[in-house]
Image (cartoon, rainbow, N blue to C red; front, side):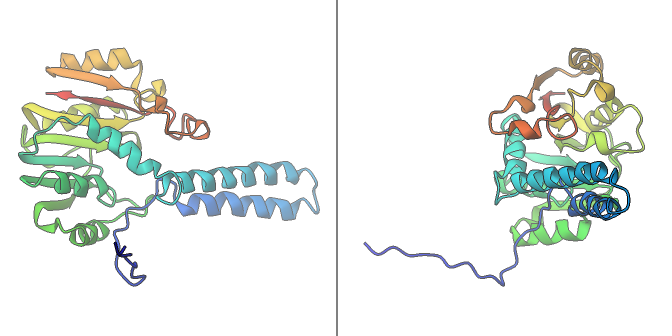
Amino acid sequence: MKLEHTIEDPNEERPAYGNWVPTKLIYATGLIGLLSGGVSLLWPGALVVAAFFLSWAAYFTYARYRFSPRGADLQNRIRDLLLQHFDWDGVGQALDIGCGNGPLTIRLAQEHLRASITGVDYWGGAWQYSMQVCTKNARLEGVADRVTFCRASAASLPFEDGFFDAAVSNLVFHEVRNSKDKRDLLKEALRVVKKGGTFAFQDLFLLKAVYGDIDDLLETMRSWGVEHVEFVNTSRSDFIPAALKLPFMVGTIGILHGTK
């Protein structure tokens, strides 16, 4: 039997979904470390500062690699876990809140051929994401006819109450600057989901300084009239390395999912 091998074209355009660890974070900590190392020639005490920042540069480099497809592909695996708890029949319209470069929006369109998916993001300068990249990714993935992207804040979604059949969000709410109480973002996200609709939100829900006690958060959501909600502790997943289970990385993430 003849085996055929597919040769990848290096000039072929591929979707660009980005990495949760920006390169500028690595460059910034590395640069400060190197500059401090230079200063240590005049002031030996600066070696401590140099070692501190170079260690962080090394850590962020490791994290970026593990999140990437070349490493452990942790970004996709964490998104996969979210989708495993997104119990939607795929009929109608779904919203992806904080879509970044559109990986989750596009994935939903690929898996639910009878659905229309809307991705919203504020696309601020803190991240290497943009609406233009989203649109290009959707075209490259062959779903441009069933996805829409628009600029909006998660704190004030430009949609009527109950407009969507389902909603998802992945590691976004804690980044929203114009909402002091992040629980308000959950309420706003649920507002645009119809009664009986499906939702699955992943964020730093175990970070008490942001969301309080998880049991209290669940009770608060039920007090809003949510029919059913459950919590899944993503941070306990075996595929996440211990080194990345720090609170500011993915050590406090979890999924709230259910039916409105």
